[in-house]
Length: 450
Image (cartoon, rainbow, N blue to C red; front, side):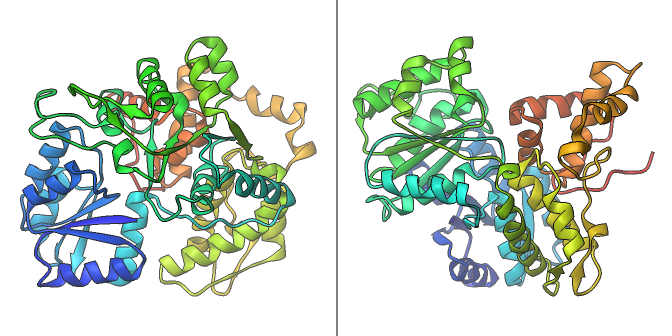
């Protein structure tokens, strides 16, 4: 992870920097907002910005918005400075970290903001076959398309390809095409020149140039607007890009890895994805099987997440009981690894000391946690019978909100489980909030009582 710290390193923020470095982060530093913006414009890269509350956070957020730079901002300051914390969050900071820094808190906040968890944990032969193929093609510069259902681990496999490639010592830059609004994605990918649009006060280097010599991951590429697809195709074919507002092309040297949870052949037939771009990206395809088809991975991942969330919450590690393991193995996991991760997070928090029992494995309401006969047609009929008389819009709303609470308020995870884009989810939540329904903020997982 790449961290940009804005503020003086003489005090506690310097200690926070050292903690981040000890946790594997690459840290850049700027004394104030303007030098920090220059670092971001220059394409040196940051996955998260940590800024001292004594600096002008609103000016930073406003500049990032005006210049179409997408990066989460975390504020930090003394724990007694509650007013500054409130102002920072209102200005647009994603989180507030009190100082003096606590190592576990900083690690948890940075992981939550960037959603970074790169451990590749598996035991199932089907997953082993995919990774063997990934390692075979990794040394080449061929474009790779990683496909699979939401939550199967496509980005982890993309990072694995990069680590096994001859570009391993160069940058790995990821862009979530679904999470970035269409009007910002072009600048994010290709950069822009000074004066290209209102707010473009300086040249900004985009992700293609930031990834020079390394790998560029286009996550959920099927969500990209068709107009941008044409520009992406030219970049791959000609190995050059045009910055927004630029007068001359810029040569690039990147290896492209793209992911999609959709069937791109179907998207081509529907006209939402360019056929020529599909062929350019599809030099080699890695297909990740869903978790329900990787039974040996369920148990090993459950143990992994149990240890991880016990440590991140300052709790003693807990063993999984046999009934808990059986309950996990017998569930269909429509949300795949992400759903399993959320389930184990809850289980760690709800279980008693020493062991995680089956009662702590909370699965979505209306399911008995079983595959096969539990998913029979008669069972489905019984479930849907209770929906008769309700409108589709009402059922959709409840499904979206229940899924969001199930994911502890995590928008990205909920969108993946629902099979919709993050943009669609945000629009729905904005609509529900406007209609007076309670919408959980990020991180909130308990639905209020009616």
